[in-house]
Length: 258
Ligand code: CAA
Image (cartoon, rainbow, N blue to C red; front, side, top):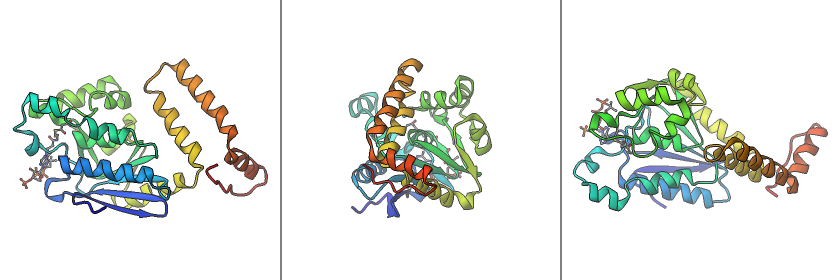
């Protein structure tokens, strides 16, 4: 499928999706969000793909939702079309792991798309923010919810109320990103992490993602029970025998996703 606002390459079991609207710092318009969702759904359905990396340019992962496209919309417009709901739910609903590789600006919807991925690897040039307050609105794709869960109330309030940006170092300290790397190494590091994930057994990869995500939705007791049941169910797979057997035989496992 040919896309106009993103580039997609599949290499060695990893789908690399590059947001590509350089003239607008990858601002998320309807076309880009639609293409991103389509590419993610294709990757999820493609047996060759075992992990996805989403990235932007050196200057911007994405500078937010497209302000030009939104500016003239009325309440009835955005309410009726349920603006951004499909796009962000689509990203969060993908079953395979997604890494956001962020350099430069990840603002507003850009920060929210990154947070809807499974984890964020940031270049030392990354800047995160929820500056919607400067536009007379608030975050609308998870910036008051996912950010609060990631960094806690105080910092989330600070970001959402002042609209200030957080640099990569602060984002790592706060737990928003999993690691910070030199900008030149960003893609290498993200693709390396994706390759590592791609080597695992797919059933355990999907189960681990589901179990971590469950922790956002349920009480600790319910989450622990869910985890235990899924852990027990992994013993029904051939890959559990292979993984543990390989350890005992001091060799690398050959997982078969069975
Ligand atoms: N939407 C549309 N166009 C955007 C954009 C956006 N979010 N962000 C940048 N652009 C465009 C600019 O209009 C400019 O286009 P022109 O050359 O045609 O004028 C081009 O990208 C380059 O931008 P700047 O000249 O502003 O670049 P800069 O280096 O001076 O500043 C910036 C960079 C600080 C990121 C600045 O562009 C900026 O503040 N952008 C807007 C950030 C923002 O408010 N994001 C939140 C959007 S609302 C949202 O996301 C809602 C939600 O929660 C879902």
